[in-house]
Image (tube, rainbow, N blue to C red; front, side, top):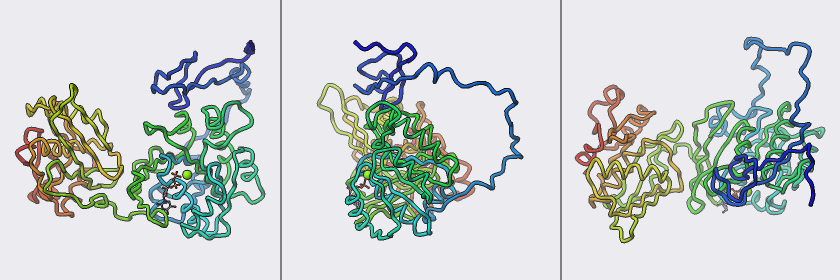
Length: 456
Ligand code: TYD
Ligand code: MG
């Protein structure tokens, strides 16, 4: 049996969530995934650190630090630059996560074409698709720029070669990080130690150069970026692309941004020739719906800084099993449990005998807590078999006590609801109601008990 070197230390890391363990185990006790623990080796010398300098370190006051040297590249798309804040900072690394087939490669090829059109250099590194596959997609997208350079490799050093070349690109896409291997560390390609090494080496490489680097990463079943969480710590910007592959909508969300806002969203529409940015997405998700059918309600949700009108559907039916079913698509299942418990207790309804299904269309996941009131309305509408008024719109977070509390962005939600002629507008009390419009079909709801009287 091979004896481990006494100068080496080992620990184990989950390739799904990045949790660390001293001993190997079959199942990660943090995320519950099986067979994801990988051995990570650390030598004693790497833990002993460097030497402490004899001279005092050079400390800078904030006044001495100049912002002028920060170079920002435009992507060629005003909407995308605005989405990130002010374009892409040179020396930054952006991570784009999303499920396979959602449209990451399509979006990035279009982004690179826009970048090249302003006379800058770009390289698309593909470890997943062959150059021919990229060409077929480029033809579909109408990209013919001869400057669109492609590198087909799995080797990190090939990428370093491009970055250190005489004419390095200002824009580089690596599709995907899971397909690149560093010869300096052990571990399988796409494994946790490889991903960590590749991401941190690339970050070091581009940090002091005029390059914007975009890394593509797959996401796991539960929506996390595959590989350790550390990947998200290493990069400057984290973007997620969401959407149902079978529908045409995609949403790009920022979850981390070291250079600008991190609550913007970008709505995109997938067509036959790639993705198009939707300029005014507020009612984009309102596809045709059966307004006479019970169980459907409209919510004014805030995604980032934008109010979006979205339909929520609920189906409450008699349960024939021992445990009633609860299923949610697009909203957190625990949130559904919570709302059902509140409705059961405060309105004295018997959900324990009912199956409840709640769905938000278009493959969007809504995390805005103000969807509560709309979800409760859809559930009540299906429970009582009474349709919600056609032009009614809802928002407001529901407390465990049944109290409906105001949410962020009240002013924006309210003006948007009035502009779109919704009535009644069923929402919590806020100071903006008096300022914007005292009597424009607004029904202020204090608690969940009042909801039934107002909406049905
Ligand atoms: P892709 O960009 O390959 O997804 P990812 O890189 O996230 O895996 O997109 C794949 C899907 O997009 C595929 O199902 C085909 C569809 N698609 C279109 O509908 N229109 C288009 O113009 C293109 C290029 C792709
Ligand atoms: Mg792809």
